[in-house]
Image 1: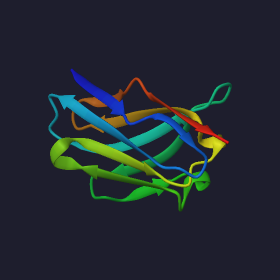
Image 2: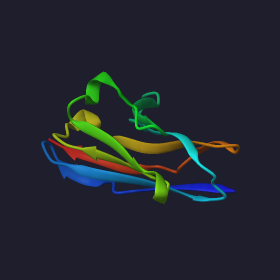
Image 3: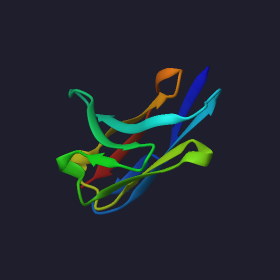
Image 4: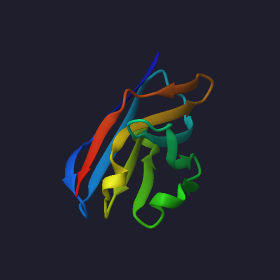
Length: 116
């Protein structure tokens, strides 16, 4: 079985920064894509940022220029550096991984709260 564990969430003031981590463990030959999603109360889950194995990235328009996704393939870990945080970034952040020959997996999420 593959497990994803997110960490790094917390409470921060508007304008501040947080760095989220997502580490995959288990029988992993490789990971095609690692993706951060978020879900705010009363809203649908939305894609925040994605990175594939060759390093190509994609961002939601709402976070471009503020968030940076990266990954360490040797550690099966993805990071989300979040700068200039806004109250509207408040949400539960979930990690998703498309694991080679194993399929998709989700983490349980980490909560980010941005106070105004």
